[in-house]
Image (cartoon, rainbow, N blue to C red; front, side):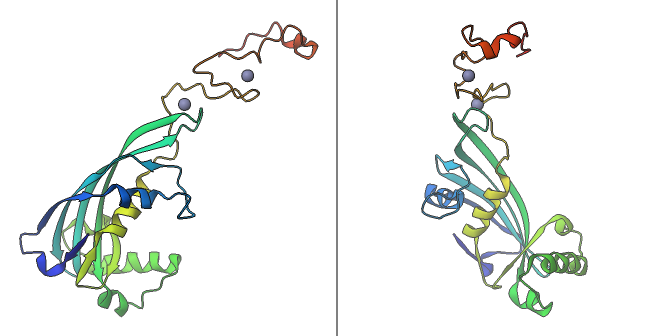
Length: 200
Ligand SMILES: [Zn+2]
Ligand SMILES: [Zn+2]
């Protein structure tokens, strides 16, 4: 999905663009990509975005909702979820970034970010916006969508708040069945534990 800077008028540019399932799936990774997030996209989405020219670049505000599935962190069952993604980016032309001797290495680019944002200043929410460099003519939204989706993924997806998970001994899904691990009358090793009531 490409946007030319010349398409952005004084009043800004509003986008309502479909995001293909393939792009989302690609972002989430898998066997083919060698980088697997454990999430799978289950449907296409729609990007709602607004682009405005601001001093020194283009301010991009975007949001979309990704429908994904992932294994529950406790019981490994499928979790269907909707991941809301919203972002504000300050897109800076390469020429401007180059003027600052932009380096790729993470730590120094963080420093540059802080410095250049202070320099650009202005009354917009640029202060809070992350910075992205582009060629100054064409904005490619696909890599931005991929990156922002990855940033929005939840760390601890569970199928439900009170998911009981799997028994650590026998692997039984404790949401579905009670396993025999707590109560083996025939096992002498369990005898000392016979009278202990587990709280859950
Ligand atoms: Zn679960
Ligand atoms: Zn068990």
